[in-house]
Amino acid sequence: MTHGRFLLLSFLLSSLLVLPVQAQDPAVEIWTFDNYMDFNTAYPTGTVFTFEDQGPLDVFFGETGFQEAGTTITATDDFLFVRSNGDRNGFIYGGLGPTPSGDHVRIDLPPDTNAFGAHMTGFFVRLEGEVKVTLSTGQEFQVAVTGLWYTDTLDPRDPESLSSFFGVISAEPFEWVTIEMVSTDYIFSDTDYVVLDTVTFGHFEVVETAFVGVQSQDQRECIVAMNKRGAKLAKAHNKSAYECLKHAAEGKRKKLGPGGDIASCLTADVKGRVDRAVDELLRYEAEKCLAADLLPDYAYMGSDAVLTAADDETWGMLQALFGDPANLDQAASGGGADSDSDSDSDSDSDSDSGSAAAECQSRVFKRTAKLYNAKMKTFVECKERALKGEDRFTDPSEFGNADPDERVETMHELEAEILACVEADPLGKITRHQARLAHKIMDKCELDEMHMPMHQIFPGACADDAWHLETDPGAFMSCLDQTTDCHFCRSMNGFDGFNLDCDDYDNGLADLSCS
Image (cartoon, helix red, strand yellow):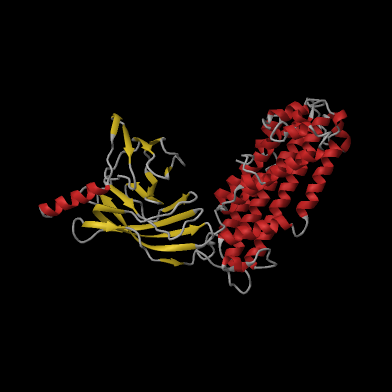
């Protein structure tokens, strides 16, 4: 390379990259930047950066999650910086080192963000890949991308000096976008290195791809099978929890497992019901989903996501009612709670040895869990109908769907159809269980029979409404219903990768009631 060409490259490089303006400590770099972030140096993992706001959007995505401007960030193996680009917002993805072949990078950008093309100058090595863009409207596109490895050394094969960049542009603002990149082997030229004066990312041709469309019968079977098994797993969690409460209320402490108390029983899976449901989920996934031609294009997150959601949301619902599980043993201690009776009798008379408060807890939880289960069952039924195009609750034409059988074609359309279907409650399951819950509250929670006030029996999120049960019983019922809505919504997000606002879904308010 001639001396003049090297000077030109150096000038172009310095015109684009923004250097640190202050260093208070050798381990700390203070950055100020406008449109571009300097990845000229491959900083080691553990380097600490503090970012100053220079535009309308200044956030960092990485293994540490979402961070606001001004936050101190510790470098990890992969960085994603979202930076302003004049009047438009955008992003650059950079990795400190080559992305292994086959790695799948998923990026969720926040509302009012536009993805843009970045232009950099330096030494590059080609990387082939593809980028999928999903807009909040449900439209999905694939961008024809040839990514580039950037390096500040003359040997692009040095893994310590390589950083990957790609850019994506969007013509219109959107509320949310998901970017997915699947990398392939990086390809070197015949020479030892590649020198390019200027490389501009952007202006890619954006075309619709097979990431949207009607799902095949096999794909539909996978989606529905995972939802059914996930709902069954959640039901198993709820059933196991109810049995712990029931045995404590009846004074049958030996049936609570080795710990002999409700708190330990809740995590012991005494009858193995949860383990069996997990095994069934994994078996169905292997049979229905894992072959290449069976894997759905959307609404499938895999068994790990379903297991996590079922566990988190059923446990979260239990905590929303009772707070610390130790509160449950407190209620059960009102009568017969210390009994060591080994009786196998399951007659109703055995409940006399338990407290009225514990009986109220167990029966209200049972009906609350059944209401959640009914919502999950309705969700699965609505999902199956939507994928088949049966008895639509939304107008397919509103989503640009011209399928003659009215089968959903995008994730956004699927979300909207399911929400409309669940709200309609076509088989009346949800309405029936709401009525049964209201009846059970009044039937099993007689205030003059319990040794504890209601706000201590249900000290969780609904404690205030429980306190006023006698004067306003509907408020407590409404709170329990909203609690199931919260965890039902979060289950849908976890099972299928939906992007529903559950804080709004549970009560129509942005009040952090379902944060």
